[in-house]
Amino acid sequence: MNRKRKTKQTAIDEKTVSAGRHENRCTICAHEQRADIEAAFVNWNSPSSLKEIYGVSRDSIYRHAHAFGLMDQRRRNIRAALERIIERSGDVEVNAAAVVAAVGVYARINSRGHLVERLETVSLDALFERMTLDELETYAKEGELPEWFDASATARKRNGDERA
Image (cartoon, rainbow, N blue to C red; front, top):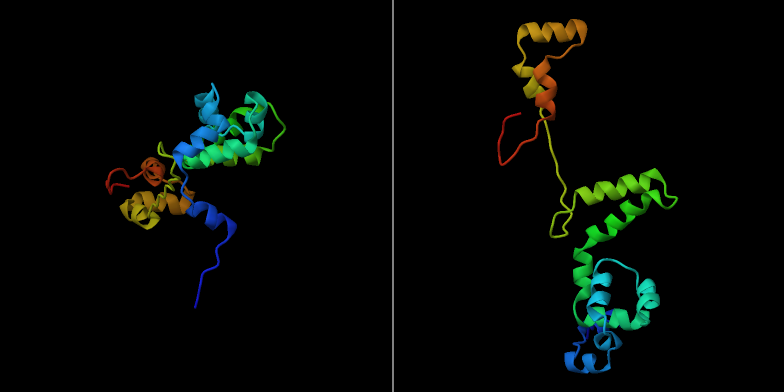
């Protein structure tokens, strides 16, 4: 018999949480600032800081987050974490590479929290084929490209527009 061994995390993931039982015992559910705690968690405030601010345990924050699907909301809200890094770049000692990397990732995340890779390609062969003989000779002799060349090489294709 080939049984897949269950890890502790697999067993936790497979458990279904009884909402009624959870709400009766949960210190977050009973907390008068429950909405603030949930919003702060989803916006990537650390459970340690929430513990200090609201007087609740880190474990109760995580249990509550798992019970109500806040972990998935938090993951989709990765932009908030990146915004915090970028905003604090002037306040703390960080290296430039970390800030540039955070800005780069932030710029590629769409409104749904998905990372979108934008790929653009330009065929230089096609651009050289568009050059006139005079433009080709000038390029060969002086190394100067026509004015339109740079604009075409950096143009972006939009909505299936094949002009380059």
